Amino acid sequence: MIIDTDYTSLSVVDENIRHHYSENVRERVIGYTEPNEEGESSPIVESYTVIVLNQPDKVTYQDVEQRRSERKPWDLVIKPELERAIAWEEFSVNHNQYLDWLDALALWEKDQPTEPVWDDGSGEYIDQVVAAPVRPLVDLSNRRGVYELQVEEYQADYEHFLGTYTDLYRDDLLVVIRVPDTEPKSDSDIADYHAELAIKTRFNAVYADIEYNGHCYQMGQGKDGIYGIDNFKNVLTSIAIDPSKEGETVYWITASNEVEPLSYSDIKAIIGSFNERQRRIFVEYSAWRKGDRLSLFTCS
Image 1 (cartoon, rainbow, N blue to C red):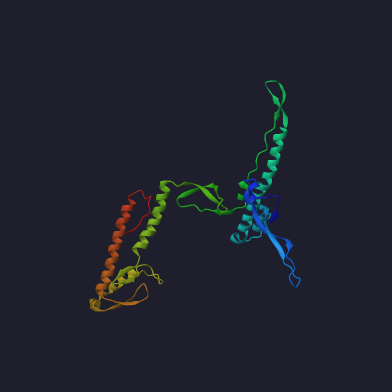
Image 2: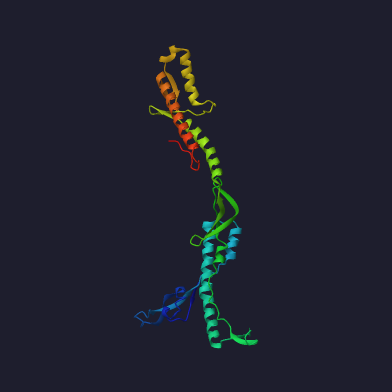
């Protein structure tokens, strides 16, 4: 809302509230030109400046709470409403209440009002000047009470939740971040947790796909419940039983569902790669187990 004022220029406005005012240039008719041959005349106008007060719309934090109770979206409705409520509060405190405080301060300085105060030294009441009016300040707790709440997660595998929270206010984002109060778990608890993860990591690494001649072959459990490495070993066993099959070609479905021909030597090489990788992983796992297990087990 724009309100006309009696100020003649911005320079005479108190510098503490000057940012709430602006110059508004207008025009007014001060006369008319002489009529032309047709008897028509034109208005003569001049520009003039009015110092206006830019008063924001009155929006309260109760209005913000109402929008939230209506389950309105934060970004589109609640946050803009909160920004308007903040603008109104800052105007109300830093302009309206500020001017009221100036009046009260001037009256206090003029009258120097007193009140009776008991004086232990004299054993009687004496008149003492009351404290000067205190300049009003914006109370941030009002706006913070309607900030958007964001609750942070904590690492349950590494921390014990103490049952309480610490609120961190981000006034620039209009949010309050609720951080769980935690304490680190003991080294033994973390070591036990890492040991559980290590078994899964080791298993997944052992049965990961094997790359051979540009194609990947599944070693892990398939949809039929059978492990890929067992299929390879079964072929090798059948050839050992019937050596005449050694020269045959086996058509194998790769991890990408392509069909590739494999010879007896190819199958032996794939099984050999699996066995070598498994051996290496177990060596790494054994070395990790001998440590403090406070870091995660990883495979090279």
